[in-house]
Image (tube, rainbow, N blue to C red; front, side, top):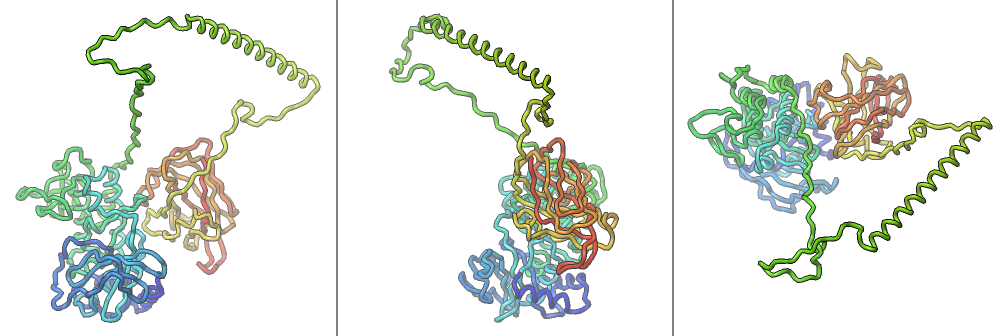
Length: 574
């Protein structure tokens, strides 16, 4: 984070005894925030769809800036992606860190400038990696601007739906991850209120992230007396659109066609054939909060927490099996058919076909046949002689008392296959309880640098983490399905003792229950190297390293003394 944004968060942490919930109330209020701070958050270049705000900006207008303009002599504006309601959104470049960022700009005298800064502070304090993170929030030179992450490898749900509805497993992952993230935000008193297909992104690793928490609503002056219900219905609308490629209201929106006018809300499985019944009912339970929900008459979901519980009660939806396209049938060419160099016959002309000779009945064929026969007889004789000689030598060695040591592979007559290293393509921290350790550092465990690591917090009880915490861990993406036979895990702390288990799972998501995963093997060590192997390799793309016991270690520059552990390097072989 930039120096400016670090200071902003420090101010927010020490600004008083005001809880995060109260700060969230400021972030979604129409009025002016109580404190004039320089804090952090943002969404991305999300909505060119319209404002949906409830107050008029009045005399203010978007700042007249242009490409190439620099903010704080650091953020260079590149492209304006949204300009409405008195503010503008840009794609920019952080010249200090040499990375792309997003920037929201509005005049300092804008009626909602204070609310935007308050919303930015509240969202930044959450620090949940499932949301697009805020990097800076500043008021200077009559401008208020909010800098946030720019995810070049992520795709908006709007773009994904342009080509058709999502596959069932993708829709299941989307509603599961988004509802869990919003439940965590509401536990801290934060609401989104502008949760649209443009605010939900799928990364290249398959994770879903949300942008614009609190800030998108503050930019447009959107408020709600029932924020949990508003966000829950928004998640239901996202699931409905993912299943049907239709917007669940009469008006068209976000590039999607609305429902027929005058017929009301129709269940997704009645709009499109082949829609998953359980997900269809889940969408209706989230959307319809004042009456009948679906054919099964399940109770409606009015909060993200209830929606998370409903998703967890569903039978698990597994990813589709990979499909393999059969190669085309072998086609003989005209050269192989013997017509190379000959003129094509005239249409309608009858070709005289000569009967082929029986195989090997020509003079050359007979000579070839006798030659092959002689070679076979010679080979059989040579082989018999070598076998007899070997048996005689073996008998002599037994008589003189000589011994010969063999390993298991020699006994079986099969050479052992060398271990094949597996390249790790990505990683994400696994925290099913919604409480990550240091999710942003998961990539440091396979960067081939043993001086960097991902670490846990320090716990008072141990070595076994339960019942305070069931475990901590990281899911690794191997790029494609691989035969995993062994894992080598480098550890930072020694002592009695570290216990870890490998599980095969189907995604990087923390929403996958541990009980639904396939256990591969477990291991335990008191040193800095933990090796876990299995007799039979398991085929999977995603592997979870799940730590359930950690040693007692002294305090250091990162944490106080207690039961803790850190992973420096992880390697898989198959």
